[in-house]
Image 1 (cartoon, rainbow, N blue to C red):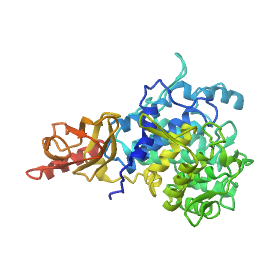
Image 2: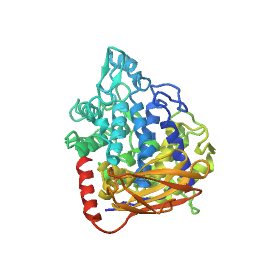
Image 3: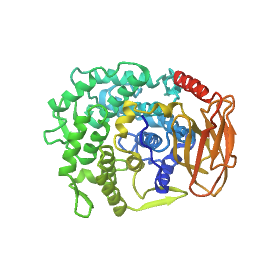
Length: 485
Protein backbone atom coordinates (compact mmCIF):
# COMPACT_ATOMS: atom_id res chain seq x y z
CA UNK A 1 0.00 0.00 0.00
CA UNK A 2 1.31 3.44 -0.96
CA UNK A 3 -0.70 6.22 0.68
CA UNK A 4 -1.15 9.46 -1.25
CA UNK A 5 1.36 12.24 -0.65
CA UNK A 6 1.35 15.80 -1.87
CA UNK A 7 3.79 18.63 -2.38
CA UNK A 8 3.45 21.57 -0.01
CA UNK A 9 2.95 24.91 -1.67
CA UNK A 10 5.15 27.87 -0.67
CA UNK A 11 2.17 29.23 1.26
CA UNK A 12 1.72 25.97 3.16
CA UNK A 13 5.42 25.87 3.98
CA UNK A 14 5.14 29.39 5.39
CA UNK A 15 2.25 28.29 7.62
CA UNK A 16 4.31 25.30 8.74
CA UNK A 17 7.25 27.55 9.58
CA UNK A 18 5.21 29.32 12.24
CA UNK A 19 4.70 25.96 13.98
CA UNK A 20 8.34 24.96 13.50
CA UNK A 21 9.71 28.21 14.89
CA UNK A 22 7.60 27.89 18.03
CA UNK A 23 8.82 24.32 18.57
CA UNK A 24 12.49 24.61 17.60
CA UNK A 25 13.38 27.28 20.14
CA UNK A 26 15.16 26.16 23.34
CA UNK A 27 13.10 23.78 25.45
CA UNK A 28 12.88 26.24 28.34
CA UNK A 29 11.66 29.09 26.12
CA UNK A 30 8.07 29.98 25.25
CA UNK A 31 8.81 32.99 23.08
CA UNK A 32 5.95 33.69 20.70
CA UNK A 33 3.44 31.61 22.67
CA UNK A 34 0.16 33.14 23.79
CA UNK A 35 0.34 33.72 27.53
CA UNK A 36 -2.88 34.78 29.25
CA UNK A 37 -3.31 32.10 31.90
CA UNK A 38 -2.77 28.34 32.25
CA UNK A 39 -6.17 27.23 33.51
CA UNK A 40 -8.37 27.62 30.44
CA UNK A 41 -8.10 27.13 26.71
CA UNK A 42 -5.46 29.85 26.18
CA UNK A 43 -2.92 27.73 28.06
CA UNK A 44 0.43 26.59 26.68
CA UNK A 45 -0.69 22.97 26.55
CA UNK A 46 -3.18 23.42 23.71
CA UNK A 47 -0.67 25.37 21.66
CA UNK A 48 1.85 22.56 22.13
CA UNK A 49 -0.78 19.92 21.29
CA UNK A 50 -1.61 21.44 17.94
CA UNK A 51 2.01 22.10 17.04
CA UNK A 52 2.59 18.36 17.24
CA UNK A 53 -0.71 17.38 15.61
CA UNK A 54 -0.15 19.71 12.64
CA UNK A 55 3.51 18.77 12.15
CA UNK A 56 2.71 15.06 12.34
CA UNK A 57 -0.02 15.53 9.75
CA UNK A 58 2.39 17.43 7.50
CA UNK A 59 4.91 14.60 7.81
CA UNK A 60 2.23 12.01 7.02
CA UNK A 61 0.76 13.67 3.94
CA UNK A 62 3.79 15.57 2.57
CA UNK A 63 7.10 14.31 3.89
CA UNK A 64 6.93 10.79 5.34
CA UNK A 65 10.54 10.26 4.26
CA UNK A 66 11.86 13.27 6.18
CA UNK A 67 12.85 13.27 9.83
CA UNK A 68 15.43 15.95 10.69
CA UNK A 69 14.14 19.19 12.12
CA UNK A 70 10.51 18.20 11.50
CA UNK A 71 10.74 15.32 13.97
CA UNK A 72 12.86 17.38 16.35
CA UNK A 73 10.08 19.99 16.47
CA UNK A 74 7.42 17.38 17.17
CA UNK A 75 9.47 15.87 19.97
CA UNK A 76 10.32 19.26 21.45
CA UNK A 77 6.63 20.15 21.74
CA UNK A 78 5.98 16.84 23.50
CA UNK A 79 8.87 17.34 25.94
CA UNK A 80 7.73 20.92 26.63
CA UNK A 81 4.52 19.42 28.03
CA UNK A 82 6.64 18.35 31.03
CA UNK A 83 7.68 21.93 31.79
CA UNK A 84 6.26 22.88 35.19
CA UNK A 85 4.83 26.08 33.71
CA UNK A 86 2.57 23.92 31.53
CA UNK A 87 1.14 21.60 34.20
CA UNK A 88 1.52 23.32 37.58
CA UNK A 89 -1.93 24.88 37.19
CA UNK A 90 -3.38 21.53 38.29
CA UNK A 91 -2.26 21.99 41.91
CA UNK A 92 -4.72 24.86 42.31
CA UNK A 93 -7.46 23.24 40.23
CA UNK A 94 -7.24 20.02 42.24
CA UNK A 95 -7.26 21.90 45.53
CA UNK A 96 -10.19 24.16 44.64
CA UNK A 97 -12.22 21.61 42.70
CA UNK A 98 -11.65 18.45 44.72
CA UNK A 99 -9.96 19.54 47.92
CA UNK A 100 -6.93 17.51 46.84
CA UNK A 101 -3.33 18.27 47.70
CA UNK A 102 -1.62 16.19 45.00
CA UNK A 103 -0.14 18.39 42.23
CA UNK A 104 0.31 15.40 39.88
CA UNK A 105 -1.78 16.40 36.80
CA UNK A 106 -2.12 12.85 35.48
CA UNK A 107 -3.52 10.85 38.34
CA UNK A 108 -7.00 12.26 38.80
CA UNK A 109 -9.70 13.45 36.36
CA UNK A 110 -7.66 15.74 34.15
CA UNK A 111 -8.36 14.73 30.57
CA UNK A 112 -7.42 18.16 29.24
CA UNK A 113 -3.81 17.31 30.07
CA UNK A 114 -3.62 13.51 29.80
CA UNK A 115 -5.85 12.91 26.77
CA UNK A 116 -4.29 15.56 24.56
CA UNK A 117 -0.78 14.60 25.73
CA UNK A 118 -1.22 10.90 24.95
CA UNK A 119 -2.45 11.69 21.44
CA UNK A 120 0.70 13.73 20.75
CA UNK A 121 2.94 10.76 21.58
CA UNK A 122 0.79 8.25 19.71
CA UNK A 123 0.94 10.26 16.49
CA UNK A 124 4.67 10.81 16.91
CA UNK A 125 5.45 7.13 17.46
CA UNK A 126 3.18 6.09 14.57
CA UNK A 127 5.32 8.05 12.14
CA UNK A 128 8.77 7.69 13.66
CA UNK A 129 10.92 4.84 14.93
CA UNK A 130 11.85 6.77 18.07
CA UNK A 131 10.56 4.97 21.18
CA UNK A 132 12.50 7.00 23.72
CA UNK A 133 9.29 8.61 25.02
CA UNK A 134 8.13 5.14 26.04
CA UNK A 135 11.18 4.51 28.22
CA UNK A 136 10.06 4.49 31.88
CA UNK A 137 10.37 7.97 33.35
CA UNK A 138 11.10 9.63 29.98
CA UNK A 139 8.45 12.30 30.64
CA UNK A 140 9.03 12.91 34.34
CA UNK A 141 7.26 15.91 35.85
CA UNK A 142 9.44 17.69 38.42
CA UNK A 143 7.48 19.55 41.11
CA UNK A 144 10.46 20.43 43.30
CA UNK A 145 13.75 18.94 44.47
CA UNK A 146 11.93 16.45 46.66
CA UNK A 147 8.89 15.53 44.59
CA UNK A 148 8.57 14.38 41.00
CA UNK A 149 6.20 12.19 39.01
CA UNK A 150 7.76 9.70 36.58
CA UNK A 151 5.73 9.27 33.40
CA UNK A 152 6.10 7.95 29.89
CA UNK A 153 3.67 6.99 27.13
CA UNK A 154 2.63 3.79 28.93
CA UNK A 155 2.01 5.45 32.29
CA UNK A 156 0.03 8.27 30.68
CA UNK A 157 -2.22 5.69 29.02
CA UNK A 158 -2.56 3.77 32.28
CA UNK A 159 -3.78 6.99 33.88
CA UNK A 160 -6.23 7.59 31.01
CA UNK A 161 -7.68 4.09 31.26
CA UNK A 162 -7.93 4.27 35.05
CA UNK A 163 -9.86 7.53 34.83
CA UNK A 164 -12.13 6.30 32.04
CA UNK A 165 -13.03 3.23 34.09
CA UNK A 166 -13.46 5.06 37.39
CA UNK A 167 -17.24 5.25 36.99
CA UNK A 168 -18.68 2.13 35.29
CA UNK A 169 -20.76 3.04 32.26
CA UNK A 170 -19.55 6.67 32.31
CA UNK A 171 -16.22 6.49 30.50
CA UNK A 172 -15.83 10.22 29.89
CA UNK A 173 -13.83 11.88 32.65
CA UNK A 174 -13.55 15.56 33.56
CA UNK A 175 -11.27 18.38 32.43
CA UNK A 176 -11.88 21.21 34.82
CA UNK A 177 -13.08 19.71 38.11
CA UNK A 178 -16.42 17.95 37.58
CA UNK A 179 -16.89 19.19 34.00
CA UNK A 180 -16.86 16.67 31.14
CA UNK A 181 -16.16 17.59 27.51
CA UNK A 182 -16.67 14.93 24.82
CA UNK A 183 -14.04 16.53 22.59
CA UNK A 184 -11.30 16.09 25.21
CA UNK A 185 -12.26 12.47 25.75
CA UNK A 186 -12.02 11.83 22.01
CA UNK A 187 -8.28 12.53 22.29
CA UNK A 188 -8.10 10.19 25.27
CA UNK A 189 -9.62 7.20 23.48
CA UNK A 190 -7.39 7.78 20.46
CA UNK A 191 -4.38 7.77 22.80
CA UNK A 192 -5.33 4.31 24.08
CA UNK A 193 -6.00 2.96 20.58
CA UNK A 194 -2.58 4.10 19.40
CA UNK A 195 -0.72 2.78 22.44
CA UNK A 196 -2.40 -0.62 22.12
CA UNK A 197 -1.44 -0.80 18.45
CA UNK A 198 2.13 0.36 18.96
CA UNK A 199 2.93 -1.58 22.14
CA UNK A 200 0.62 -4.58 22.15
CA UNK A 201 -1.31 -3.48 25.23
CA UNK A 202 -5.04 -3.77 25.85
CA UNK A 203 -6.00 -0.44 27.43
CA UNK A 204 -8.89 0.22 25.06
CA UNK A 205 -10.86 -2.96 25.76
CA UNK A 206 -14.57 -2.16 25.69
CA UNK A 207 -14.14 1.58 26.15
CA UNK A 208 -15.10 2.46 22.57
CA UNK A 209 -18.35 0.54 23.04
CA UNK A 210 -18.90 2.22 26.39
CA UNK A 211 -18.41 5.65 24.82
CA UNK A 212 -20.74 4.86 21.95
CA UNK A 213 -23.45 3.74 24.38
CA UNK A 214 -22.97 6.73 26.66
CA UNK A 215 -23.07 9.24 23.82
CA UNK A 216 -26.65 8.28 22.94
CA UNK A 217 -27.97 7.06 26.28
CA UNK A 218 -26.76 10.06 28.27
CA UNK A 219 -27.62 12.67 25.67
CA UNK A 220 -24.11 13.79 24.68
CA UNK A 221 -24.96 13.14 21.03
CA UNK A 222 -28.37 14.67 20.54
CA UNK A 223 -31.09 13.32 18.26
CA UNK A 224 -30.41 16.17 15.83
CA UNK A 225 -26.80 14.99 15.36
CA UNK A 226 -25.27 17.82 17.38
CA UNK A 227 -22.88 17.34 20.29
CA UNK A 228 -23.33 18.79 23.76
CA UNK A 229 -20.24 20.93 24.37
CA UNK A 230 -19.83 19.98 28.01
CA UNK A 231 -21.57 19.09 31.25
CA UNK A 232 -21.19 17.17 34.46
CA UNK A 233 -20.39 13.48 34.68
CA UNK A 234 -23.74 12.93 36.36
CA UNK A 235 -25.51 14.07 33.22
CA UNK A 236 -26.29 17.75 33.62
CA UNK A 237 -25.61 19.49 30.31
CA UNK A 238 -24.08 22.96 30.66
CA UNK A 239 -22.60 23.95 27.29
CA UNK A 240 -24.88 23.68 24.25
CA UNK A 241 -23.73 22.52 20.81
CA UNK A 242 -21.44 24.71 18.75
CA UNK A 243 -20.01 24.04 15.32
CA UNK A 244 -16.34 24.02 16.30
CA UNK A 245 -17.05 21.22 18.75
CA UNK A 246 -19.23 19.32 16.26
CA UNK A 247 -16.44 19.52 13.67
CA UNK A 248 -13.78 18.43 16.17
CA UNK A 249 -15.84 15.38 17.12
CA UNK A 250 -16.22 14.48 13.45
CA UNK A 251 -12.46 14.76 12.94
CA UNK A 252 -11.23 12.86 15.98
CA UNK A 253 -13.79 10.01 15.92
CA UNK A 254 -13.10 8.87 12.36
CA UNK A 255 -10.81 6.07 13.60
CA UNK A 256 -12.96 4.66 16.40
CA UNK A 257 -16.50 5.49 15.22
CA UNK A 258 -16.44 6.24 11.48
CA UNK A 259 -20.20 5.78 11.19
CA UNK A 260 -20.83 8.39 13.87
CA UNK A 261 -18.38 10.80 12.18
CA UNK A 262 -20.08 10.41 8.83
CA UNK A 263 -23.57 10.79 10.33
CA UNK A 264 -22.62 13.97 12.21
CA UNK A 265 -20.73 15.49 9.29
CA UNK A 266 -23.67 14.99 6.95
CA UNK A 267 -25.91 16.86 9.38
CA UNK A 268 -23.43 19.70 9.90
CA UNK A 269 -22.80 19.96 6.17
CA UNK A 270 -26.44 19.85 5.10
CA UNK A 271 -27.90 22.11 7.77
CA UNK A 272 -25.16 24.42 9.01
CA UNK A 273 -22.40 24.79 6.39
CA UNK A 274 -23.95 26.51 3.39
CA UNK A 275 -22.47 26.99 -0.07
CA UNK A 276 -24.12 29.36 -2.55
CA UNK A 277 -24.20 28.87 -6.31
CA UNK A 278 -20.78 30.49 -6.63
CA UNK A 279 -19.28 28.06 -4.14
CA UNK A 280 -18.93 30.67 -1.41
CA UNK A 281 -19.49 29.64 2.18
CA UNK A 282 -21.49 30.80 5.12
CA UNK A 283 -22.57 28.96 8.25
CA UNK A 284 -25.35 29.29 10.75
CA UNK A 285 -23.70 30.54 13.89
CA UNK A 286 -24.35 31.66 17.42
CA UNK A 287 -22.17 33.55 19.91
CA UNK A 288 -19.98 30.52 20.69
CA UNK A 289 -18.98 30.21 17.03
CA UNK A 290 -17.40 33.67 17.32
CA UNK A 291 -14.97 32.81 20.13
CA UNK A 292 -11.29 32.13 19.53
CA UNK A 293 -10.78 29.68 22.38
CA UNK A 294 -7.04 30.25 22.26
CA UNK A 295 -7.27 33.90 23.33
CA UNK A 296 -10.97 34.43 24.11
CA UNK A 297 -11.20 37.04 21.38
CA UNK A 298 -14.46 37.51 19.48
CA UNK A 299 -13.48 40.01 16.80
CA UNK A 300 -11.67 37.31 14.84
CA UNK A 301 -12.90 34.32 16.78
CA UNK A 302 -14.66 32.64 13.88
CA UNK A 303 -11.22 31.53 12.62
CA UNK A 304 -11.34 28.77 15.23
CA UNK A 305 -14.73 27.51 14.09
CA UNK A 306 -13.90 27.77 10.40
CA UNK A 307 -10.59 25.90 10.75
CA UNK A 308 -12.30 23.11 12.72
CA UNK A 309 -14.91 22.84 9.96
CA UNK A 310 -12.18 22.89 7.32
CA UNK A 311 -10.30 20.05 9.04
CA UNK A 312 -13.48 17.97 9.31
CA UNK A 313 -14.39 18.63 5.68
CA UNK A 314 -10.97 17.51 4.45
CA UNK A 315 -10.98 14.43 6.67
CA UNK A 316 -14.42 13.45 5.36
CA UNK A 317 -13.39 14.00 1.74
CA UNK A 318 -15.65 17.03 1.24
CA UNK A 319 -12.98 19.01 -0.60
CA UNK A 320 -15.46 21.46 -2.10
CA UNK A 321 -16.56 22.59 1.35
CA UNK A 322 -12.97 22.62 2.63
CA UNK A 323 -11.84 24.86 -0.24
CA UNK A 324 -14.79 27.21 0.32
CA UNK A 325 -14.00 27.45 4.04
CA UNK A 326 -10.36 28.20 3.27
CA UNK A 327 -11.39 30.95 0.84
CA UNK A 328 -13.73 32.40 3.43
CA UNK A 329 -10.92 32.51 5.98
CA UNK A 330 -8.57 34.32 3.65
CA UNK A 331 -11.29 36.73 2.55
CA UNK A 332 -12.28 37.64 6.10
CA UNK A 333 -8.94 37.69 7.92
CA UNK A 334 -5.52 39.12 7.15
CA UNK A 335 -2.60 36.74 6.78
CA UNK A 336 0.67 38.24 7.93
CA UNK A 337 4.08 36.97 6.84
CA UNK A 338 7.31 37.73 8.68
CA UNK A 339 10.71 36.05 8.28
CA UNK A 340 9.09 33.41 6.09
CA UNK A 341 6.36 32.56 8.63
CA UNK A 342 2.70 32.99 7.84
CA UNK A 343 -0.26 33.15 10.24
CA UNK A 344 -3.58 34.87 10.71
CA UNK A 345 -3.14 38.27 12.31
CA UNK A 346 -4.57 38.67 15.79
CA UNK A 347 -5.52 35.00 16.00
CA UNK A 348 -4.36 32.61 18.72
CA UNK A 349 -1.62 30.05 18.26
CA UNK A 350 -4.18 27.32 18.92
CA UNK A 351 -6.39 28.52 16.05
CA UNK A 352 -3.37 28.96 13.76
CA UNK A 353 -2.23 25.45 14.68
CA UNK A 354 -5.68 24.09 13.90
CA UNK A 355 -5.52 25.85 10.54
CA UNK A 356 -2.17 24.20 9.83
CA UNK A 357 -3.66 20.82 10.75
CA UNK A 358 -6.56 21.46 8.38
CA UNK A 359 -4.25 22.50 5.53
CA UNK A 360 -2.18 19.33 5.74
CA UNK A 361 -5.08 16.91 6.26
CA UNK A 362 -6.15 14.76 3.33
CA UNK A 363 -9.29 12.58 3.18
CA UNK A 364 -9.08 9.89 5.84
CA UNK A 365 -5.73 11.08 7.19
CA UNK A 366 -6.68 11.37 10.87
CA UNK A 367 -8.30 7.93 10.70
CA UNK A 368 -5.24 6.42 9.00
CA UNK A 369 -2.81 7.96 11.47
CA UNK A 370 -4.68 6.78 14.55
CA UNK A 371 -5.10 3.29 13.09
CA UNK A 372 -1.47 3.15 11.91
CA UNK A 373 -2.16 2.80 8.18
CA UNK A 374 1.41 3.69 7.26
CA UNK A 375 2.89 1.95 4.20
CA UNK A 376 5.66 -0.53 4.94
CA UNK A 377 7.84 1.15 2.30
CA UNK A 378 7.88 4.33 4.39
CA UNK A 379 9.19 2.41 7.39
CA UNK A 380 12.09 0.79 5.57
CA UNK A 381 12.97 3.00 2.59
CA UNK A 382 15.56 5.79 2.42
CA UNK A 383 14.89 8.98 4.36
CA UNK A 384 16.17 12.54 4.40
CA UNK A 385 17.62 12.49 7.90
CA UNK A 386 19.06 15.98 8.17
CA UNK A 387 18.82 19.34 6.46
CA UNK A 388 19.57 22.79 7.82
CA UNK A 389 16.59 24.84 8.97
CA UNK A 390 15.43 27.25 7.70
CA UNK A 391 17.86 27.13 4.79
CA UNK A 392 16.12 24.01 3.44
CA UNK A 393 12.33 23.73 3.36
CA UNK A 394 11.15 20.23 2.52
CA UNK A 395 8.00 20.39 0.40
CA UNK A 396 7.87 16.67 -0.35
CA UNK A 397 9.84 13.61 0.73
CA UNK A 398 8.64 10.10 -0.05
CA UNK A 399 10.18 6.68 -0.60
CA UNK A 400 8.87 3.65 -2.44
CA UNK A 401 11.18 1.44 -0.38
CA UNK A 402 14.15 1.76 -2.75
CA UNK A 403 14.33 5.30 -4.10
CA UNK A 404 13.96 8.66 -2.36
CA UNK A 405 12.15 11.57 -4.00
CA UNK A 406 12.48 15.09 -2.62
CA UNK A 407 11.16 18.52 -3.50
CA UNK A 408 13.06 21.29 -1.72
CA UNK A 409 12.78 25.06 -1.55
CA UNK A 410 15.17 27.62 -0.04
CA UNK A 411 13.95 29.14 3.19
CA UNK A 412 16.60 31.81 3.13
CA UNK A 413 19.03 32.94 0.43
CA UNK A 414 19.75 30.56 -2.46
CA UNK A 415 22.96 28.63 -2.07
CA UNK A 416 24.67 25.29 -1.65
CA UNK A 417 23.31 23.11 1.15
CA UNK A 418 24.20 19.73 2.59
CA UNK A 419 21.69 16.92 2.87
CA UNK A 420 22.13 13.78 4.96
CA UNK A 421 20.21 10.68 3.93
CA UNK A 422 19.86 7.44 5.90
CA UNK A 423 18.46 3.91 5.67
CA UNK A 424 20.40 3.28 2.48
CA UNK A 425 21.82 -0.13 1.67
CA UNK A 426 25.37 -0.08 3.14
CA UNK A 427 28.12 0.06 0.55
CA UNK A 428 25.68 0.62 -2.32
CA UNK A 429 26.05 3.31 -4.97
CA UNK A 430 23.08 5.60 -5.50
CA UNK A 431 22.52 7.70 -8.59
CA UNK A 432 21.47 11.23 -7.62
CA UNK A 433 19.66 13.71 -9.82
CA UNK A 434 19.35 17.33 -8.78
CA UNK A 435 22.53 17.30 -6.67
CA UNK A 436 26.12 18.43 -7.20
CA UNK A 437 27.36 14.82 -7.32
CA UNK A 438 25.84 12.32 -9.70
CA UNK A 439 26.62 9.28 -7.53
CA UNK A 440 26.94 8.81 -3.77
CA UNK A 441 27.95 5.69 -1.87
CA UNK A 442 26.22 4.67 1.33
CA UNK A 443 28.55 4.14 4.26
CA UNK A 444 28.60 1.10 6.48
CA UNK A 445 25.94 2.79 8.60
CA UNK A 446 23.64 3.24 5.60
CA UNK A 447 24.14 7.00 5.52
CA UNK A 448 25.42 9.44 2.93
CA UNK A 449 25.94 13.20 2.70
CA UNK A 450 25.87 15.24 -0.49
CA UNK A 451 25.48 18.84 -1.67
CA UNK A 452 22.61 20.48 -3.51
CA UNK A 453 22.55 23.92 -5.10
CA UNK A 454 19.22 25.26 -3.90
CA UNK A 455 17.70 28.10 -5.91
CA UNK A 456 13.92 27.94 -6.11
CA UNK A 457 11.98 24.71 -6.38
CA UNK A 458 14.45 21.82 -6.63
CA UNK A 459 13.75 18.14 -7.25
CA UNK A 460 16.22 15.57 -5.94
CA UNK A 461 16.03 11.82 -6.52
CA UNK A 462 18.18 8.98 -5.20
CA UNK A 463 17.98 5.59 -6.89
CA UNK A 464 20.17 2.55 -6.13
CA UNK A 465 22.49 1.57 -8.96
CA UNK A 466 21.22 -1.81 -10.13
CA UNK A 467 23.54 -4.77 -10.01
CA UNK A 468 25.32 -7.30 -7.90
CA UNK A 469 23.76 -8.02 -4.55
CA UNK A 470 21.63 -4.88 -4.19
CA UNK A 471 18.32 -6.73 -3.96
CA UNK A 472 19.61 -9.07 -1.28
CA UNK A 473 21.15 -6.18 0.64
CA UNK A 474 17.92 -4.22 0.45
CA UNK A 475 15.97 -7.18 1.79
CA UNK A 476 18.43 -7.57 4.65
CA UNK A 477 18.19 -3.86 5.46
CA UNK A 478 14.40 -3.94 5.39
CA UNK A 479 14.38 -6.91 7.75
CA UNK A 480 16.80 -5.15 10.13
CA UNK A 481 14.75 -1.92 10.15
CA UNK A 482 11.49 -3.79 10.72
CA UNK A 483 12.98 -5.81 13.56
CA UNK A 484 14.45 -2.76 15.29
CA UNK A 485 11.55 -0.35 14.77
